[in-house]
Image 1 (cartoon, rainbow, N blue to C red):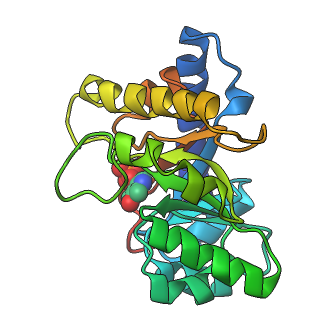
Image 2 (image 1 turned 180 degrees about the horizontal axis):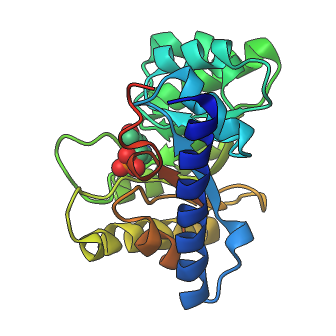
Length: 238
Ligand SMILES: *Cc1c(COP(=O)(O)O)cnc(C)c1O
């Protein structure tokens, strides 16, 4: 595909995703400006990611830290906000932190502490979301709700900006089956905001919704959706 062909394909898919977000917002009287699209570029090359960024999608997500820093380096001439959406090992925090706009996948208090320590060294206040295993699947990373609700002293005492919560629903052909996990996340966010002493920007965001279920997530209050397949399917070799 030429650069121009690639741009045309991506522009059409982006328009379609934005239209679907708009329709989902309209169903529940939300302003689409309150939903940030993170394009998850983990299956595509820096060239395709760059094309998306040039079309105005400046929030890009990667699930592996190594791939994030490879792409961040390749695209360092663009004002991209990199989102780390996959599991982060503590030994990768030092290298990832300066490159990342928002870490969606903080799944333990130990990791939160490591991120805070690294932020202190660099004189920055890291921005994170806490990952919740709202679908209660064994193999998934993340806090369970009660475990997190009990962690107020550790979370609020750590010099990190906890901007919200993130979850992944169980994979299913039927997006309605994802809804309960999204409701759990929203209610947990609301509960923590009322029980914990927080500033107004803390725990504001809900990162939920992927290609198969983002409209349901938007209906349930997602402020960030993370979309890969719908945008990039078939472009893996470009
Ligand atoms: C891959 C991935 C996505 C995007 O998933 P799609 O179904 O391809 O849209 C979103 N969030 C996380 C954590 C991912 O790993």
